[in-house]
Image (cartoon, rainbow, N blue to C red; front, side, top):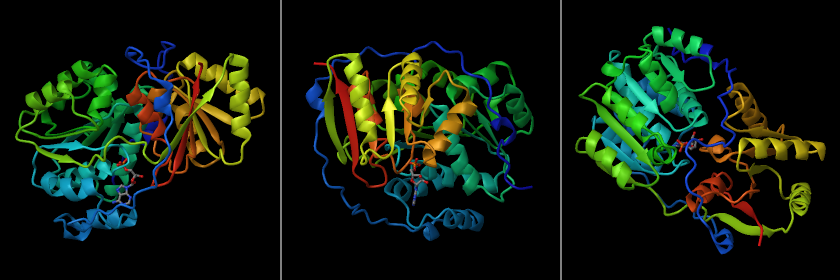
Length: 396
Ligand code: AMP
């Protein structure tokens, strides 16, 4: 039996009930001075990191090594180099790392190695958004190819029935978002008491999104003896609290290189009236250097309105937000990734964690709620060592 991840449950069709806002718990809006949106890009640092291990050095199954090679990974990234040996030893880990550092493989490789040996072990991976959960699932799928392990992807907006079928197959790996995992737990369609490996990915984001109680509830339902791997870009007191309550003698690995955004050329676009605003956006999008653009706007309604307006103006554009069906969101991302569309309009939550290496521009059509959101938004451009551009519309 080959590794069989939930192809059945990928028939996404049900839109998530929309609150029209585009985020779960809207944090208070910070006042961010426009000067914080202006910054010259620093030349991209050539990564001087010399790994202390090669993938071949890790004591892992040959199938896993083959799958790593097949994926095209040649040398471990810093988080992989430092976390994988501890992960393989069964230690609890706190990984302080941003998206894009290779943290998925840093936890996937030790977990899969354990599951290859011990088919009774069970791993739960919790991520803040559906898109990130799907990206993680794809990564697991490629590393576990040919292993016979079975996985389930439990995310909102996708068919409950198909997830139930996958859960009846007693999957070794469950990946999902907090709300849907909790749904299954409450319906007793998922029993977490045998899950002895837990990953919380982007813990800070999950806390920001109001998932802290759900997370505590889910962690409380796991096997008491377990390996816990928490990844977060920042550690604040709430996260400290989770660490104290749920981790045992964790090793901390930090590969965070300060705030991201250094390789992003940042500037503002000033406008006085909304009619002028859309015209300025129009002009920008026709510029040749503005090759692939992610536009952020604030609410589901605004994202839809802006998308329609751009369509009327002849742009080939699509939108993602929490009110769209999962199928639509996936299709829009696929089209954007494949350059079938060059402009994607999104809310913060829907675009979180998107890893598309050739986005040239991030445009903040609305000012983000917090500076942290801003940094996260602009980090969607300038991936893979490139210089990116971020333009923020401000109304003086
Ligand atoms: P992540 O931070 O896990 O989302 O990974 C960011 C991107 O880097 C993904 O596209 C990964 O497939 C890729 N990646 C992760 N680790 C490596 C590696 N060791 N070599 C090459 N690419 C990698």
